[in-house]
Image (tube, rainbow, N blue to C red; front, side, top):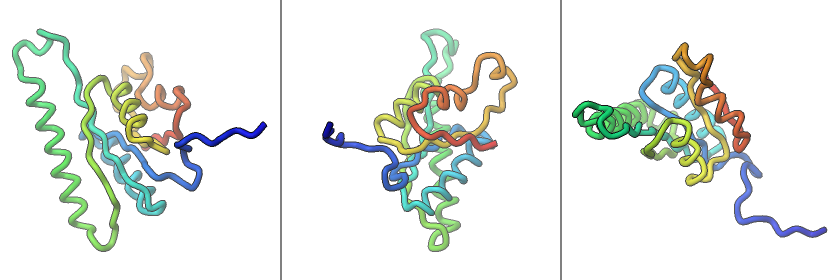
Length: 152
């Protein structure tokens, strides 16, 4: 049985794209730093992904949610650029910043699919409620579509 290889094969020669979910939390920033090291060592592209939450109509009680989440994304990009400048020449990593909309799990799945991720890195949940519902990290691992690294 001679099968033709598909156009895209994940991780055959090491990762080419590493997706790291960032939301400004300490654990997500540690995950981004860890993913940066992986990307540098593997000469891979680091795709930093922020998922803007989508609020149902009326849930925000008139608060401009899109503006607030846009400001978070801008703040993350500024922080990432500043960190990149501090280590330029010592720790060079190719990186991109992407914003997706939705709940964190669905947004990261969409990002990993669209960016053809070879690996996904996320921070451990800092919410106690995730013991009952399941964290984004656990859901990504259970999806079984990419190697997932959870950084404490």
